Image 1 (spheres, rainbow, N blue to C red):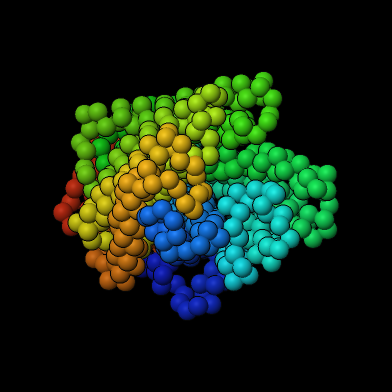
Image 2: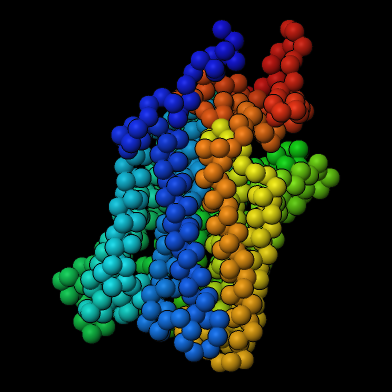
Length: 557
């Protein structure tokens, strides 16, 4: 039987079994990833709504729509929802779950039951975090800094919130463990380490950080829970504890967490660059090694968040120097992406527009991070809007934009449907314009001394806040439209061809949407990022040119 006939005979993963129970108890990585994805998109809209409430309040000095206490709750919920429910699980847990086994040519992840368990841990953790809204809400900021989070009057909201973060951490650990074993054990014959797509290198490096760093977060919030319930002096200075110790524990996890967000984004951008320039990635091994080196260096620089916390001058100098070293692997990636663009046959489709936006915004985020690594400069900029703008350029302008690029790139593959390309391009430009209008003025505010987290401000900053608020609404509307047209296309979109973009990695050899076990027959391992054999075929997308009779298959072992 021909492969086409076999593919048509094999049901896709939507058709195998239907109904709520078949989804709730599924062990198929694609369905689990899709459930993650819908939960993350809902959380994105929720976190974005809190952001718009924050920006609306800051439109004018003084009280606009809320009191100071309510404002504190808005920005805490915005940060916690966006960090723990959207950006950290966005690419690894949702899109990684769907695409990693297919890019490997594998039928599923190594531990399907653990995969489903990690999803339900995410759901339970998200429910606990959102339960804190009903219980009075948390106003400590998303970092839960002590002694703010030790206030006994707020225990009813803080305890479910930190318990939710604890569960979300273990969901992340289980996902990372699953990915590590899958990459090691499920690679097909002929796919060595340097025949893996760069997206898999990035997910592998991310999984290392998830497994090694996230337990520290779990222990930290568990200690916070114990202090609330048993009143043991760990972080509470009135009981002999040390609140700065909480910061050390928290940032030892949270700085690797920044790379848990950004390294998978870098893997996605590498895939988009090579596909939409129609040429092999420039410096493949350098990009692969830089992903792993970022994962390792991320554990050594947590102290740069604490230059003004009272740690020793020697520690400050060491952390400052180490922070500069992180720029090296990041710069390698940017250099290689630009090298890939050089003389490429660039196609400005929606995923590529997001990839180009990523390069611009990640470069801004990275360069402004160098200012914060300089000790004397950081003393002035610490806890100002300069820091807010910097980490939003890294977390949202880079990680979330790459998530959107990945979502549009693989959406036709795992749903079997195309989205409206022209509307998607307009929204990608709206995201870029809205984001930069929101956060570029904040660099100016911060450099002029505007502190972060303040409900009120001096009238001299009014114009900057107004520009930020207008930009936030442009960004919010663009993201809302993106979610809407994707949901509509999920049911009513035009049927997607097998390979709409001309990609060369294994997922594009699978049907759209994939069959239950991804491939109707074992995939052939072709040379990575080789575009010579891929040609356009009208409405059928891109196809491999038939090889002459008797010619050996073009493979790379």
